[in-house]
Image (tube, rainbow, N blue to C red; front, side, top):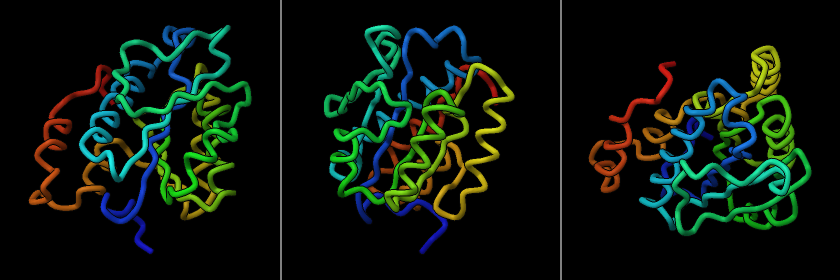
Length: 192
């Protein structure tokens, strides 16, 4: 098995956008980049709707608000409300049945992301964490979570949104690369 995420034609990949909600938008330093990554992957999904799923979770939206409006959700996005920290609730589990790879981004790294990744690995999914699209309120929590998840073996890879786009197309002659190339020219709001 390749260490890279497979070409988009080699099975389903889920883009899992975790809890990018209004209540957190001012409290997480990397939040603007998380939104940037969410939009980048939404457009990737729109270019490859047969090969990808775009799943959005919202943690207790009654109290924390819904997904921020700056994220332009694809028409086919599945938005799932939850109270569990892990995103792997029955509705999401059902959506992931035919998925081999999960690309995970959102907040908070030490809570919902960490528990989601653990559950995905327990489901025998390969997980690709987008470091440019992750955040926590406290840097110590974020660093500890990334370090811990990085130790979880070869099925949990730390990468970036740009790298995922390039890995999934593999070749500049790919028929979908032109649409992807436009995404690569965009700069995140906070330089990394």
